[in-house]
Image (cartoon, rainbow, N blue to C red; front, side, top):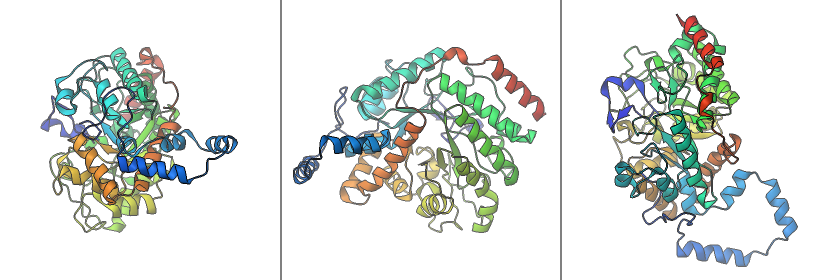
Length: 448
């Protein structure tokens, strides 16, 4: 849940309303099409391996290539630096891909959003109104197109562009898109079909702007009336009613050919502390977690949700280490992967939030997140530093390169599944269509 900010400052009065620095090592080449640098030892090892392996015949190579998908072939072409870069989803500042920003210069050493993408080659970009990314439908479409073109300069993996568009109180594109009800209002209708329709409309409008991933739906069961950060962002307080809503929303996003994110695992609904500013502790037993928090995530997974986002919350009955779920192997791998059987992308919540920075430094946090099972590292506060920390952990053997490959392959398969390797056509004029307005009016009326 990247927090709601304006001018880089959290708006305390609106903390209910939001959630979800260049990816690349120091010395990464900024020129277009330049390959990420490879160490001499890595190059020597690669050369020795090639020399020791008999060359496959052209027919064998062709058959092998045909048996692999785009994701597998892209992974096979990447060096370690390219792979590590794919793990990061970042913020860029400005309304135009080629427009300079002092914020980009200060954080990344380059001025424009396109230069950030060219230099650091992140796996994804997340758009925010507070980062100056949103001023008009045509402008957003041009920005996303320019960012994708910058990512294609080196012929590598396509860029995933996402946004926090939950509707209701979290609406990053509020001024541009159809005004739709938030989760609590949809939940009040008691009709999962409404959750599907609203998600479909949302996805279609995001797709028209060149956005391929929505950090929604919220899968939390909001049982704490004092919860400062979830509240009406959840479909309700009864897991038996929330779960079908979440599953229907996933279906709606997929009908629009947009990737969806169920958040915030293992559940953020029973907190009285905001993880943007502190570290919440939830004392649910394993049994209570399985009956209260887990059902919406189980349903999202059953409906093929693309991404599950972790929560910066401590659940001592699930993991007594005191680490937040984002850094917990027991929770991300033991529960989400092994018990719930999720095979898609695990994303951290925003790594600039206080809840994940309480115990470890920013370099250690990203390493521990990967070791816990995370694939997508969202909004680290110092991107070059975070990148170098992962690279160092791989070179030291603390993280195996095969573990990085697992995450990158999941990310690339998601991009392939949602059509990012092919052309993406924007259509800003498709926003606020009569059909979309009818859906909004119907659901608002039923929620009263």
